Length: 296
Length: 307
Image 1 (cartoon, chains in turn purple, brown):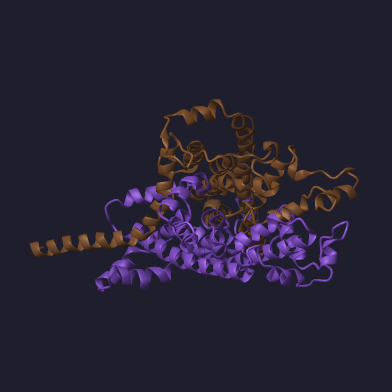
Image 2 (cartoon, chains in turn blue, cyan; image 1 turned 120 degrees about the vertical axis):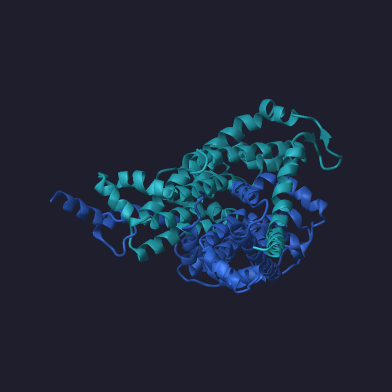
């Protein structure tokens, strides 16, 4: 009887279960409060952003909004910076920058990932090792030499400085390369026998197969570039070339008044929601990529 | 095989190489300009005195010697702060994200997806953007949510000026960073745990594993070593990159009484406020070495290649 009992016990403690089982309740009891703690600040932003002025002044402050309005958003859009540049201009800059970064970072990291995974050339092993080493790279550590390099290249106040530094993301290349490693060589060889050249193999076979990895780079890049105010602060002096994240930061840095807090919350929401939507849409693809994320 | 086909093959190989280089070129060009050259420049500048106006003057190891012997702020505040912050946010956050991922993996798919999304979503916000929210929660007068709550509960009589306070700022920074630290590494470990071969567990139980804890230590962790390593590297890098939060919360660099001064703030202060680029570069090099050393340590713990 003993082995059978063991086996039954095992069924109850299975990892990755297909459906709910009472034995899962104990984990739920730990996870639910943690999830609540994680969620609370986000709920707060949502509520604060929709509060009308008088509710922002309530004392003691209330967490939930009672009469939601779009007033904060309206005031946010109406406000123009000290330099007379409307918010829509910053938003437009951010959208252009984000689209450019997403497109080019996907193209260059998938091209490089394909070569580093499937093509043979001298220096390939070294390049892979350098990139693994670069996973440990902490960008903020070298902000000063980076500034000097960018200054030497004459890219200060150039719109493209928003784009260029974000194109090479070691984590992105690493994940793409790991993902391409899973594609069987036979598939590519068969295409080569049929006369396809490397560029055709890349566009017709590799790119369609690595959509999950592409989705992951899109999310990672989006997160970095959409949220980044540093480029505008450090490399851009011309106000009309700055981005929405920067504008957001100047707003939040100068929130002395209670009315400003409502606007800042509305702006935070505009910053956060696109991230969330993109992640929700692509989350299953991301999980697919992450399964191959290990460093061996 | 005739000689002509061999020559053809050689030609094809060469062409193959050219294509491969063309494919990696754009990436490595950007990589060199924005990562490799700045790192090399930091190393070079760290041996100089450079105020951005005059050309750098070679001074050997003076910057490093000064950091270690003459920089009171560095020794008294930056190192203890950075250590405390890094240990709790780094290994602490890492273990927490593994445990959360492990518990999530025990749940049914729908519930798991929802909870994982909630736990991951704070990492989608950028620390600095969210600073406004934290500033309202921790505001130093009775309009702050936390102060108002504590006053109502009768736990305090006077509002606490949390964000300018020497005793609270670092703790708040740690909580805020932990809150937003369940990022890519967390997802990687969750995906890893979900993909562990179920037969391993069955075999483990036949071999005498008795409880969930043993199962985690003897089966799950070894099975997802590569993801554990990826998660560890992400945790280390995340810890040292997220350091702008103290300045964002308190609104000044240096932070009040250096309460939240971390090595990254120290670099920024010397570079952009005092224009001592050589000194700042030496601090950068130290930071990069520390990150590298911790990453190596994780490779020793979880790596399969060089043990």
